[in-house]
Length: 422
Image (cartoon, rainbow, N blue to C red; front, side):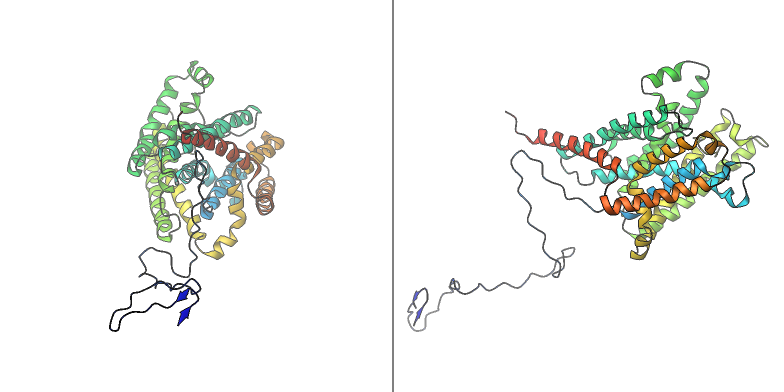
């Protein structure tokens, strides 16, 4: 007998026929799959594509991870909450009963915004594995700070009747650079120091320099935001550090979201409660908004920057973030809140547009609001605009410019580090 590959070989009687590979025209037998390993992809899931070989001297491309809807929703809550704090009628003494709830957004919305900035920093750095990767991450963060700092300064210089947070945001980004790789426990220690001792330093220096030229001189050197800014960075870095630890958690796990809600609520109740009791005991009958040094250290008034207010705000930020993560952990909730997610994904654009509109409305709309009509119109308009833009064009215009500039700078740094020395 012959085969398509040649005559069949002969073997002596009783000998064992050696195993031979199948002929070229016959497909090889596929071995059975190995026993599934814990954590491995199931058999019905397509295998991952082989890694793309990068040219020599080129940085490896990092796969883009999907956005976390709950974080975007929380960011929208912060942006819209700051809008309520700016335009809501709940701050006026003669506000109607239905608007009195709006005071809860004062101070807490901006604290949530700063906490989520820390989450963003962690998400930007989660794929870094080598020293070169970390150099690229630091470059990306530094470039974003370099863009946000003058943007915030320009917006504030225009003369808007609200305080712009972007300059402090940039300073916090720069302050985070040395601690990006610290373990979570040390980040929490630093956050605790900033939230407890930071207010003592800030309020003490403000008291000591009242009537002097020190604040103006330091603002001239770009250092005023650390102590004398409306959002003093020496205190507000605590929010950012808490957010960095939060970003390392299991953001997709409902148990983690529930822990944030429970822990954050407990922390807020304890801090606000202790501060209120101490204020009532140490300054009975005094206006809490006008407490001087050192009684200001026990105040829980919005933007008082006392330890009790700051820690309470951090608790609120954790609880709100947990609620947003929990609500979007189900598909129905994620779909229902998708307009808010679109708004949060364009937070820089929406915040800037809101400032422009508030500037056009004038100081009267901020300090003496006659109705919540402008607030509702701007809030609904922001959500509709963001939803349509995200659906049609993707990233917001300012987000695209910011990420484009920072990503390009990071790629250049990584490429330079990967180039072999001559």
